[in-house]
Length: 112
Image (cartoon, rainbow, N blue to C red; front, side, top):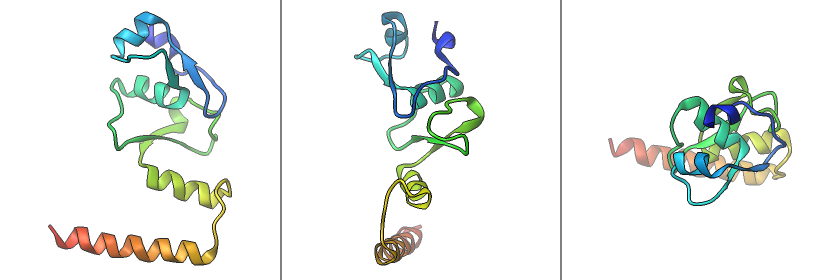
């Protein structure tokens, strides 16, 4: 039954209701899941870890096909949204974010 849902096309940010057997098979306590995340987990054959998010490729947020989905992180999703204009920012805020990330990167690489 799970494979019947895998690869289905849904609207962007759409949550889908899953039948009780699918919900139980996934170890969920509720019957609604985010379509992109659900499809990606089906394709991978595992649940995404807490730090992982579903990233959509050039096909956009409405294309939940295997070719358009990848595992990523929230930080890179936010950067993509700033670049595509769905999140607005100023050059000053972007510069500040870059400087903060560079400082954090230096800090964590020096710990190694």
